[in-house]
Length: 154
Image (tube, rainbow, N blue to C red):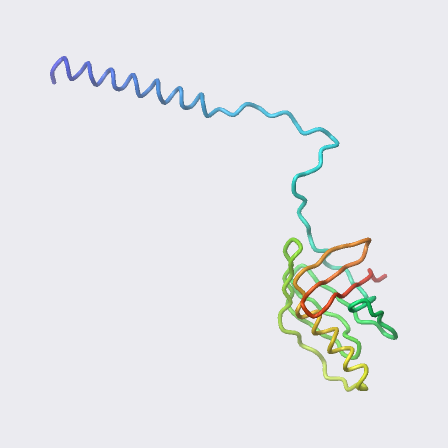
């Protein structure tokens, strides 16, 4: 190897090591001070209130009368409850404020026509619910077939 080549290799190695060192220094992130105590988080993650029984108050602003439907969702995404005449179960996924309710299985108790119609409307609104929110302590489910409002059961 010639002296000129060796000098070029040493110079190149020196330049590279200086460049890597300056890059490492440039990438060092300074310590950030903690946020003030009264700072509002930029994004609050919403978590569904699992393992809580909810009793229906209204469907599309019409109050339920008599024995009211209910809704319960556990952490394994199994929902179940009373639909007005029968009991039901379904798989229900919840993420942030969105939700998806799978096909609903029900018992086959026979009820009068008015109660069957009310039950069908409840189950249709529940099955097509796409969004949920907690508003003033009430659970609100929204979808193209209606708005269901529930209160926490004892």
